[in-house]
Each structure stands twice: as C-alpha cells, then as structure tokens.
Image (cartoon, rainbow, N blue to C red; front, top):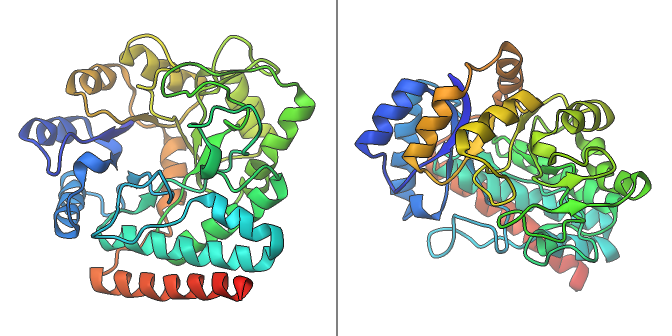
Length: 342
C-alpha cells in the first residue's frame, strides 16, 4: 500500500484505473462532482472501490461541508447549510447552535454513509478573518472567534461519529490569514506568533478528538519562511505534532493546487519527507498518479497505526437505515433552529 489518496476520472472505474489501483494499492480515494450522478451509481462506485482494495474500511473521502462546498447535491440529496450559519446562531444561542451543528453533521454523515462514502472532509477549523481571500474560507468557517470555532467543530466531530463515519479537520495550521487562494497561488502569511496563536486554538482544542487532519498550502514566516506548511518539516513536527498536539493521520491538501511548484513526483516525495502521512491528489490525471506511485514508499507502520485508529469507528450500514437516520437528524436540527427564531 502506498501513502496516497487518489481521485477518479468518472462515474465508474475505467479499466486503466482498475489496473493501476490494483497494482499500487493507494491508501484511499476521494470523490468529486464528476464521479456523482445518482445514489445507485455512487453506491456501485464505492462498492467497487472496496472490492478492489479488499478493505471494507478503505477511506473514501468527499468534500461535503455544506454551502458552496458540497458534491452530493439536490435533487438526489438534501442541501446542507454553510458553517457560517451555525456561527451566526452561536451569537444568540451557543448551546442550541452546538446541538444544531451536531444534528446537521449527523444527517450529513448519514447521507454520505447511505452511498458508501465513509470520510466526509470536515470540520473546517480555519478562522474567518479580515483580509483573507474571499474565495478561500469565508462562509466555510464558523467565524472569527476561536472558542466558537472549536465548540462547533467539536459538535461536528460528534455528529459525524454518531453517523458512523470518519472526519478530517482542516486546514492545519489555518488558512484564515491567507490573502491568496491556494488553488491558484501560494499564500504567504506574515503574522507574528501572537496572532497565529489564535489560529491554532481550534486545532489544539480538538487535536485529541479528530483522528485525521489536512494541511494548509501556505507559508507562515513566523515558523518557516522557506516552505509552505505541507512541505515544512519544522511546521509539521513543531507546530502540528508538538504545539497543537495532533497525533492522527495527517494528509496534504490536494498537491496539484497552484500553491505548490515542481512536478507531482517531486511534490509527493517532499510531503512525505516533511512528515505528512498521506499525499492527496485529486485530478485523476493518470500520468501524474503513475509518477507519484513510482517514488512513494510503502505506508509506514506509524501511518498504518494512525489509519487504524481513524477508521476504527466507521460502520457500514444499509442505505435505507442511513437515509432514515438522516431524516430524523435533519428534523432535530430544524426544530432547534426554529426554537431560536420563534
């Protein structure tokens, strides 16, 4: 098994993908809109990934935050609100906001589980701060208050666990001060230690509860002026592992993003050398995946330990029971929200 999570090109595995994945055995997979048409098709696709890998708990990821970042959408699936809506509710009713966020996450996780997706990538723990690029985080965040973000992030983790799916906190150590969208360029954050301490608070508060995390492709000059967090051994060891205290499975953000430079093989090799457990590559470009597989080592014993912990609570369930659970959780969420506005 190699420490990579790969994207797929379409709604079913191509012959080339099937042969390649069987040969290199990636740690997991990630789905996007191009892979999703209707519930039956998605369930068939995820079943085929489990059969191919020979692992019932193979991580199958999806960006399903709610709001503008969601791959499972109407008319086949419910639309979920962006994180900011729960942050707004927190301002008037913190306890209710936490219960509503937990119910929302349980419903979202159950919807994912109903089609065999076991790892929705949330919660977003980046702060929503002035000066950040408007397309980077914004309404994907619960807000600018670290206490609020940590409390609602904890509720999301609990709700996803209630649904029997895994979670991925992102994007450590935080995109909240990134003035450049990392999909297109490299953000350089010049904030000092005192300011950055606030960005770390939600991650540190949940480090022992979240068993997977995703890095940020951004340079933080206070810690390492030469390399973005994803490629910085200094940041991964001293900030993520020691200061934040995160001992879970650490994956990169998509290494094909514009924030990074060099060919994919070099990027992949550098992320593992820096201390990331897993490399995430989303585009499904076969030549790039082949180049990565040629240079990546086998998954380490430490990464396997972290993977086992992260997936230990994942449970596969029947589609009908997962959908029923989601409906109950959605009704609970809506009743909580209505109780505040009544």
